[in-house]
Image 1: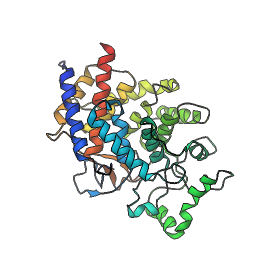
Image 2: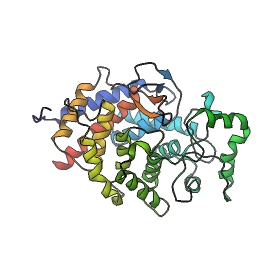
Image 3: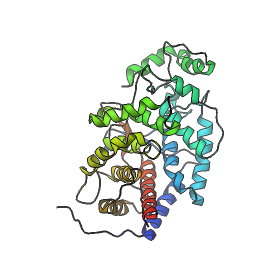
Image 4: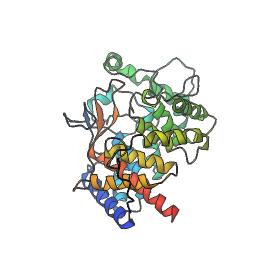
Length: 354
């Protein structure tokens, strides 16, 4: 039986743990604004870890810290991140998963997920970058869903930047072809979380309406685990969908099923799922749905206890190389970003209820 005794979370405790986590990120951000990332074959990244220079972690962590930017140290983190992302931008205002100095950068196409995350961060920080709205809107299939990759496809388009970006693979045609053979991705990938992130960036409009129906259908059919090649953890899907709930009330039918499924993952120690990472995403998902009860208090207490002396939380795979999950990417820094966001979201709930 799970211990159901009430836990009292104080504002002082919250602030101390948040500040400790911020200190960790502030100390571990690279001087160029990048954050550490590894790839590994197991979820808890214990078997082996290989460092990988990628753009995405900086965008993810910065997005998590947006509501904490009153902190002087967070401001410094975000300033470095903005410079890093501005340097990594490609022609037309798109981004690659790999940094420009990673050998895989020249073979990997730019992608939608990295682009909307980096764009969101720079836009939130009021940093100018090339308007990529038309490029993103032109990168949809016949059903109105957004492709994951910016690659050549037979289509009518008068946008010169569109063709310049898409034709990048023609510079190294053999290596570009090998890229698709060596990875589980395909040129016409349509991924649920990627589309949820586009919806978050653009909001609901005529061009993104199809995404809402797509996400609702996935929840109704209970197919969250198979809806995205990269984000294979169901809780990750719930989190990214829930970020849209505040401004896209058409997602209401997904709210109760998601809350119910998250509560099916409760552990005796107060955690959701099997890690601090899954617990953090669950707390933020529930907070995004404006849901709070005593189980959330226990989950926050679990995060308090799971925080390392250095201020971080243990690393965990965040996204994978494909359906087979041969490897996944993650780091202490990424998990710490999401734990800080969860604590900040919880603090916001306490403030709104008081």
